[in-house]
Amino acid sequence: MNKPLQIGITGGIGSGKSLVCKIFNALGVPTYDADSRAKMVMTTDGILVDAIKKEFGVLSYDERGALNRKYLADAVFNQTEKLKRLNELVHPRVALDYEQWVSRHTNVKYVLKEAALLFESGSYKVLDSVVVVTAPETIRVQRVLKRDPHRSLQQIQEIIRNQMQESEKIERADYVVVNDENVLLVPQVLSLHKQFTV
Image 1 (spheres, rainbow, N blue to C red):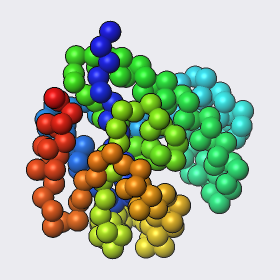
Image 2 (cartoon, rainbow, N blue to C red):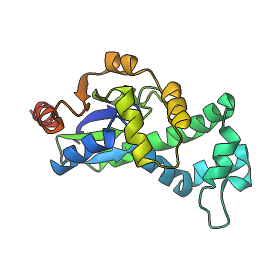
Image 3 (cartoon, rainbow, N blue to C red):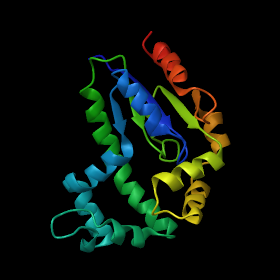
């Protein structure tokens, strides 16, 4: 069975990962959005659902079986150990979901895995290359303020502080896409697409 090349796409909040993925999608490249898949897995994977209920209580889900985000967020907010425990439960199940997803895409040259915490979660280790999307912090903050009106400036800055430093991500990247509104995005993506399809 031919496995496609597996390329990771990451970057800090507001860097433009999703926009870059949309350009790749327009080129016909399948993309696994780890954050939205994780939300799905947290309600459809029986093993994970049971583990979350056991660890955080039955109130983690409502009577319809939907994830009680507010309750869980409150349970792990500012509790490093509890957040770590939640991630320890979720990441392996998402990794399994990703593996199964890749096995359904053997007919393409490469696939993308978009994840905010690609390095932090260790999931970059199974990938062939990692692309980091970068933008200056001031631009990133402005984008998120516009995109997520429910977030305050303090919350956004807190998220940025809790994510791996931009400089470290760039250092660990195989490829860097600059999304600072000066350098054109499409030519950068086309150039990568050409390299990945050789």
